[in-house]
Amino acid sequence: MQLWFLGTGAGRPSKYRNVTAIAVHMPEPHGGWWLFDAGEATQHQLMQTSLKLSKLEAVFITHLHGDHIYGLPGLLSSRSFDGGVSPVHLFGPCGIKEYIGKIFEISGTRLDYDLIIHETEPGLGMLYDNGIVSVEAEELEHRVPCRGYRLTEREQPGRLDVDKLRALGLQAGPLYGKLKQGEAVALPDGSMLAAEEVTGPSLRGRIVALLGDTKPCENAVKLARHADVLVHEATFAAGLEEKAHEFGHSTTVEAARTAREAGVGQLVMTHFSGRYSIEELEQLEHEARSEFPAVAAAVDFMVLDVKRGDR
Image 1: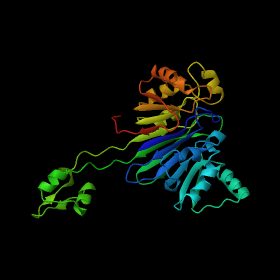
Image 2: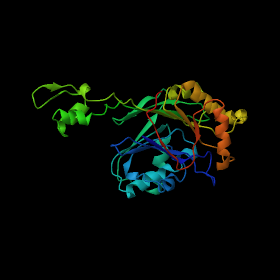
Image 3: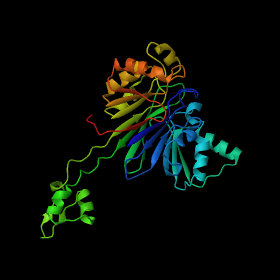
Image 4: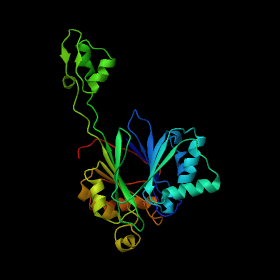
């Protein structure tokens, strides 16, 4: 599982970074990907990556501020030109259906695939499951209805001991698949082989929390509890808490406190105000590390491999 940061800025694009968009590339062999928010020019950012619009499976919008949705209509339209024919699920607050519908109606846009729009209310809970990763959501504290998302990967079967299987007379084939799924199989001598005899420990599922814009709040901690990675906005530097809260945002130190309280493996800060240059990100990281050690400040086109570290 990989996180692709397509835009890491707040409010409007700057010469340092584009506005918010994060892609989540599914674990292999799935090959598809999900998009979280789609600020202006997100599809232009995608052109600088290997991600294909035709492989887009679902879009999750945190809230309806322009820096999170202005790039969505064009991206959805371009997917038809990019050979996308499979359905796309779009999740967002009430109003997202009207927003997309009006723009497509006025512009005469037609899609070559089914766009399935899910408007969700507070008390969100489980939203989506593609058989590999499930998504649940909770409301956060911002100036408009806004949510954060928690992605949970299913536990994976342990690795097969191929050398042991060959020594027992089993060659690669359908029986390997059955063992991988935990089924017992018959050996050439007629005896039964239990899957646990030739498989390693199960691989636990990874957890990622992707939050929208928010002040520090209980639901942020709830969504991030024991996550491998927490992506949290850090619009302002430490010391600007009053200004941050006025606009429904958090500071670097507040993001780090949420990470510490939730017991996450790693914090990635994003959604930086345009007042901060790339060179100043090191200082923002330093502030956050006063509360939580495993911190990174995201930059556009950063790709993060989500590891199966101990939680």
